[in-house]
Image (tube, rainbow over all chains, first blue to last red; front, top):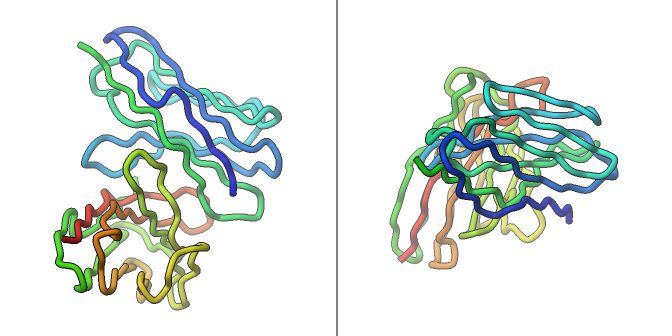
Length: 112
Length: 115
């Protein structure tokens, strides 16, 4: 059983502040790491698919980094806005497997 | 982006009855669809992988006779919870994978409550 952990479980951030959270995953047999944003009553939205050690990806105010050797990825949000409030999920795929193994998510609340 | 719909969004049924949940890819063809289940405060857990035109592959511990999966076309997969019991109450969510890629696009999920 693959172990994918996210921390913190929940986070309250003042509007305008920047924040980050972590996804840790097995460092062996790595293939890809996915980040999703999941707003209540909506479908999880794909943010990033990361495959290479040292990858950095950016989408607007959100960015992510990847370290496959030590088995972690950080998601950063710069200048948080109320619309950033959501649960952020990471999911790991190991080599030779098409299945996503999800973490439990980080629930982010932006305080206006 | 790719859109996946799921119906119904919420269903309440009586113990012993069966419930069918539909997952559709609206603007792309999905040879592979996935069904997940989420219990409160837990992660999304893969139940089964559904390939168009063939039998679904179930994860360990998931009863295939209880959770019937049919993937009859490239845009539709269905999950039928047979003889539902209160312990089947959960959040069920599907995803569809784009051809030639590992990206999965998710439906909005179905909240099943068995009374």
